[in-house]
Image 1 (cartoon, helix red, strand yellow):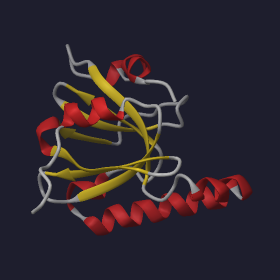
Image 2 (cartoon, helix red, strand yellow; image 1 turned 60 degrees about the vertical axis):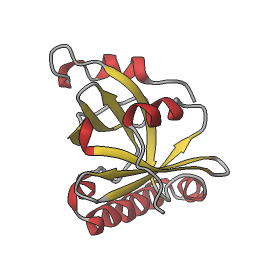
Image 3 (tube, helix red, strand yellow; image 1 turned 45 degrees about the vertical axis):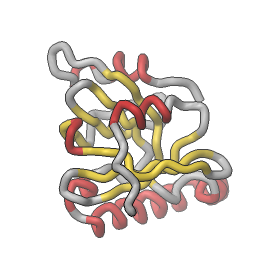
Length: 154
């Protein structure tokens, strides 16, 4: 998986504030929609895809707070100097940002390896949380360093 930051800069030009530039962008999928979910998508693409997206949306809504407004579908998480944007995309076709939050309102609280990718957890200033699956080969470490991490509990 390639670094999509330059592509994000081009695709989001009309949605960015004057002088705002993406620093890092990663493609992310709601927790549980990558890996085994991909097998279901291969077998029944429309039905399984909608079911996985609905499950992710329900989980975000149940979490409440800012996390409730995240898209329940694959998206680009784009970090600029001022904001984090979640932009629904399949990697080729980009829609307008579905979620925007000031950069200081989000931190990484989980990042771990998985068989096919990595898990990324975000925590927002209101305490709500969201988890994503991220394919390997993306600039995930740069994303984590740029966003900042919550210190481990304990």
